[in-house]
Length: 262
Image (cartoon, rainbow, N blue to C red; front, side, top):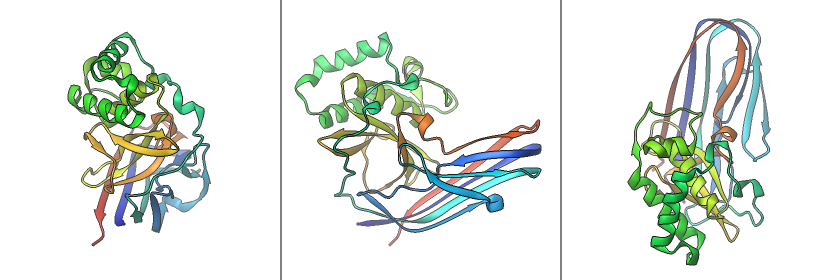
């Protein structure tokens, strides 16, 4: 059992005063068979909020700020116990994890690449876990981690075309390949030691167990990771989403820290 302490802080600065600000946040780690929240503190500006759970089981903080303001800050901090020998259980995972989304759809270029891998390694005779492990390593090898090339609306096929992107793109590409192979897979957002920002990876279901793969780091998910949310793709796991009234530009500052408690 490993204990991790995390701090997740985000601040928005608006160029002018805004009002009627409605927001939803996914910043609280999940309680699962693999990880348990030991201590938790959350802070949201003006602290007028409601807590709920979305359709995927992700914890959500929803609130509104009607008064004029030019900053918005929220924070989650706590300790999480990680059992590296345990796995999330889901004997009948949602069928939607088997099908592509707009962000994880295949194109001809990706399909040709996957077919070549399948022939080279013999995917048809391999278990889903081993296929996933192989695809993870191939994505890591052929992609280059470059910030600013893609954005939150970039699809897997677009990022794969240029072989460049960030963790979100790596995860979407892997999901596209896995679902094309008939493997049940979902998108995950969380934190990991040494990153400094939120991180994205993939989970696959085999025989009722969920296994995590991080194609950005060519790594099977272990005790260095804290899971916050999961869904079909990025759009189901957006950390901070909202809308407001006012003509203002916004800048965002994010600080994420994960340390092992000794």
